[in-house]
Image 1 (cartoon, rainbow, N blue to C red):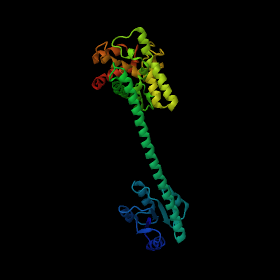
Image 2: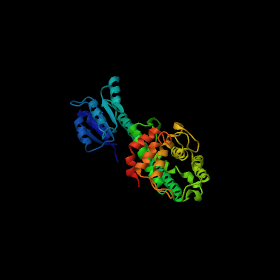
Image 3: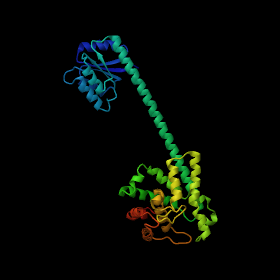
Image 4: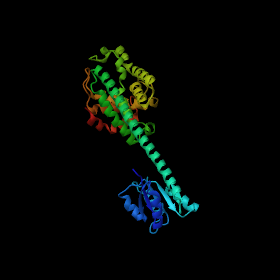
Length: 352
């Protein structure tokens, strides 16, 4: 199929000469002014526009500005056909977006070769652009598939942990919802925003599901004991933080470190540290505890308080909030506890 060329010139002689030179190889639409060109553009999209500069009413430069300002026409290649040969006009035309200048009077071979070269280049650009778009679409599709796969693995691992721990049903789902509420509120209230700048919040929230992954290594006799743990049993239970660190470290070594695994490891190892340094496994204090650990500490305790266990009844939401605020500055980061207190009603609404 022949490519379509718009030929825009107010000179009937120039139109006839150029049309005769081009019509053997191209479908030529001859137009006597810029206004006619814009009318024709509503019906046809040419592969190239040959545009005269010196025309009445609207000259070529003005027409070029309008073409480039319209998203529907901006990508159509334009070559100026002109008797103006000074450098200033040529520079101005190129600045406006013209591909080239062909000086009148022109020879047929020069006109045909210049048009052919530019159309070939344009075809190559379009083909390469189409290839890049296709490659990008494929990459996005594969990335989405990998994200879905990773999320599926995370949910499965979290379910394995929760199915073993008969005492904490729904804990992972609830803490995932709560932590999103708390992080959103911290960002809104400007608390630790510098540390959170650049976080992929979807990745952070998803990785929180693995904060108790280390419980896989805890014996069932302790994990599901229907009553308070002995001192020795509690010491064994406390090892789930280090076991979580060990498990995720193995995953990192085998698959390569990434943001998701790094976040999951941080949640797993630090969520039982306390602001005053009395927590475990490392006894870290205040801001030496990773921010994700300090955030999860509040959420983990809140859910434990409002949930029923074989050895205790569930506290009311109000009682749980009061306990957390009493421990602000001891167990919990006071800034995070304050944010929690301001949005605790949202936690109660999200409870399930």
